Image (cartoon, rainbow, N blue to C red; front, side):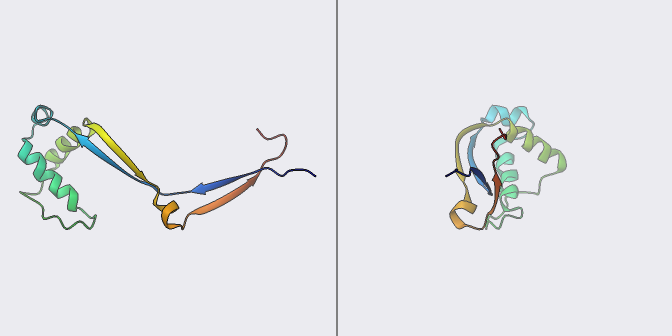
Length: 104
């Protein structure tokens, strides 16, 4: 009897939650104060994500948003969690592919 070898390919969606850190010096070097950085962060938290966070301060300008992104892109990741939620909840697509003897 011959074995049949195949691949099962699962297509998942994942949420990655990263705990990030930056210092006051990095924030100030990018043109913001720590307080203004936190205000801009509060506007980002509530922007379309369904969080019930009341934004603090004035809405950021385009220039402040650019400064904010420079800071967060340079921040250090101190912890990271992955939630493969389609695996936990189901509802992902699966494909199968037969592996022929001459396939690598």
